[in-house]
Length: 87
Length: 299
Image (cartoon, rainbow over all chains, first blue to last red; front, side, top):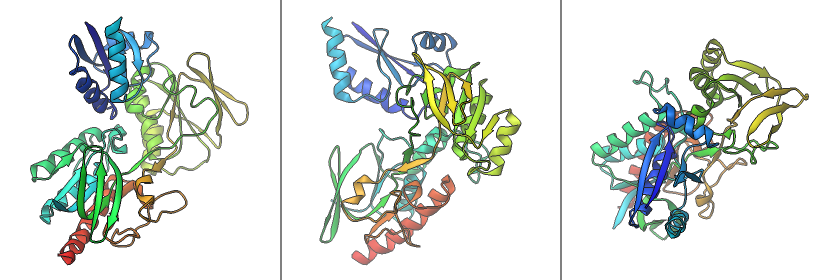
């Protein structure tokens, strides 16, 4: 089981496409959970992101590690999920 | 299937074209490249679009999309990848298929311009940002600088101040490209101004720690928001002979027609002197009016 977390903000125009791509690719796999966190609505999440060195949205975490700091390409998400599932 | 009109881009220009295409009963599709969101979506607050007192850019875009759909229009999340001119039609290829059409409206807009400052690329995502509404949240209670002198820079500075950042706006001139109203709002909000200076270097270790100005002055900051204007998204149209100026912005005539018959352009991708939502929507209205005439003449 792996967890993908998308860190986003309400007014970020690049966040909806990032979410759409991650959800689409994640649906191809079993055992992948996708979680979206609006850090502008969740102070704890914002603090956690800052402590992780995140200063950009969308940022995509796989199993709590920063994997992408932009809108990822579908193939790159696929590769990252496969790699995480193999571990 | 032959379409009357393909609208490439789903910012305010493209969506206004989508609305008016329905009024003229044109068989049209708006192509929305979700990888390149409209610049409008990055605006923290739009307060100069008639009929809407104040609205976040993202919401205004969403309302326009709803309006297109409510009128029976079609928006497809597809990215145009090539255009071919054939004898009596134009073919728009996308990542998901192709569309044969009589006319095209280019509403691809523009993307942010990079500053070319030493350290800018290195610290991208580590303190350097091009979207205050996206990333400003990471800098609450911290010092940030905003670079630029246009409406976007002023809006970013005001927004960042409003969420609790200590904001310094650095601009190379002592006058602004942005509206006087935007300057006043930023000043009243408490934005500090450093004028007639440029940033020579962005410095830090793991993330941004300071900027160095042209006279050697250092300003400590955690974030650098770059707002140096726009670069038009027009590469797709060079191969079919659409003429552009030296900056790459598409040249249009009084009918919003490009140098290629039946191909129109609106909004930030064009040489328009004033990059505003109202300009893009007005231009789109005129473009659809003329595209409709062109399409009817082809029948």
